[in-house]
Length: 316
Image 1 (spheres, helix red, strand yellow):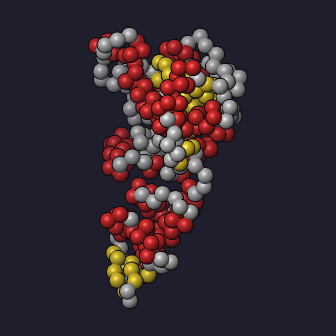
Image 2 (image 1 turned 90 degrees about the horizontal axis):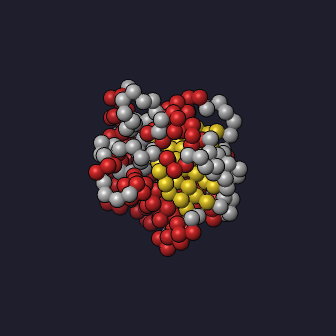
């Protein structure tokens, strides 16, 4: 057993480091099986040598985030602890830097995991990007953020968002209204992300002008999508024919992002997911980027990460 002092420059830094109600330091202690003790009026960590060294390394990394005014919430602390346990702590430095986007209220949107950073870099670099991973990894949200950036920078003239209208246990026919009204609940996550990025007023004006188009996948047939940033969400629920139809809509000066979760396929039995097929046959083509996010990239409630991990273990 060894003890090592937690070196800080000020009380304010210590408060930020420990987090509200000491939740940050409690998470570190739990992750590395160490405990905080008071020694000569200073806080120290006590535990097995290897564990203490890892915990101190995490604390030093968190101090870097504090110095650069990065947000230090419990989700980020848990993620950095996971990186340290996987001997990938150095990768965390990639998360320092400029925001991916700024919301309508002026809040910076930043990557919270290394996987998310790689996903954003792929979207910027490639004409077509596949983002595959479990719920809560920010696949759709970050794609919308990059799309909004592109239209603000006048790189494209239009944002087109689409999803397949496949029921996850419910029946569309029993919902009231015409087809557009029936599929609106399926498109709700896209509406929400756009409204947050642009602000409700700007979003409404862009929808009215047709600068933003949100439609079921069936509406894409027969079109050529030029000068547009196109996002296909929930692509695991496309058939092989549907995703081929979508990909071949690509026009001049356009980008496409296809997102999906291969553990949540709602297609009828006997149908192969178009997303699964596409990433297998397109993986070696230049200008097409593919990233597989994992449970380590889940940025919702920490319990979501544990749920995803449990289901992945069961599937294996």
